[in-house]
Length: 296
Ligand SMILES: [Zn+2]
Image (cartoon, rainbow, N blue to C red):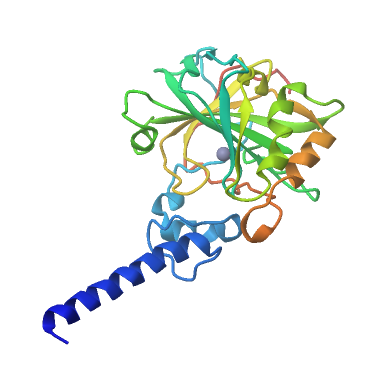
């Protein structure tokens, strides 16, 4: 074999090996070798996130426990104004099971027009939930965990893309609402929930007809908590301006159960308990848009 041919063979072998590694890391549920920036992570190995994603070990992480006795009234906090949420049914939105949650893509025409120091543009919404054995919100209030949590994710449009905004201070905003079992079906969640069986397996995608996205939020969005934190999943970027609404959204127990049991994640197992444990504040202040009730 000539030198040139040997060189070419080695090059081919190297290329093949590289291709297998790339595919292997995507396909296998729990790869043994995980380098920095590895794209695979799971809720089962939360303690390991920071070895691949250093920000996950930072000091401005989310979620947090909101200790209502320690919150500070933020007189500068403005009412949140949402624009463009009543979508026409002719508009089709992508709904996908990404193995960690169910994600509804949102048009950038949905904005937070006011309530922050700049406008934010919608990217997607997704949910966190528990299991029949226990609740699964990410944030907790005075130590109480709710059945689930809705996250609407936004980015600052002065950056070219969501990915770029994700790396910039104040680049992202998330509106969070607690979900709790109540006596009646919540009709506003039906368009989303009834499509869950269509995306049962990881990687599955379907579409949802446009509906009034704002109705997924509490009817009273004037009372909220605000703090600086992070994405609650890798890469845990510490660039999120959080708004956590005080009023809880009620779904029926049947709807909560559907959410807990409709999807599968890795290894064809039920996708449940997709929440991260609360993180230390490390001196951060949590602002409230309202004065606490006297004596409460
Ligand atoms: Zn989330």
